[in-house]
Amino acid sequence: MDFPAYRVVSSQLVMALVAAALAYLLFGPAAAKAALYGGFVALANGLFLVWRLHRGERAQQNLAAHQHLRSFYRSSLERFLVVALLLAGGLGALKLMPLAVLVSFVLGQLTLIVSVSMRG
Image (cartoon, rainbow, N blue to C red):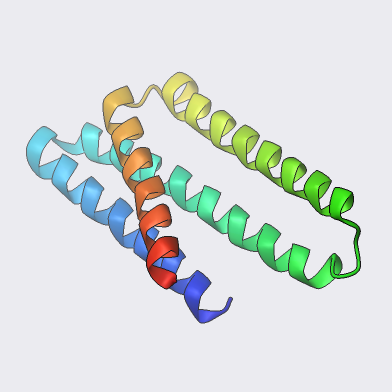
């Protein structure tokens, strides 16, 4: 993993841990577990994005524009489905606190956006 991608993913990891620590201090261990799960869903999304970007750079250098666009749509759909399934699993099967999961997930996604935009 190159340095900018490492910085993005590590900043998401730090945000997940900070959100879990704050949730533990404010609301207890159940909220911390839920916040940690939401942060790790955002982290999984970031890792999946980095993986697809690296894979796309290596394999698709000579593709036509419509093939790049199709790859972009496929990657977006895959990421959406992975996030939706992980969130549904956390909220449904694991019965985690919904607000803590979603707030931590949103913070992780905001960290991704801010990290990438600060990269330049």
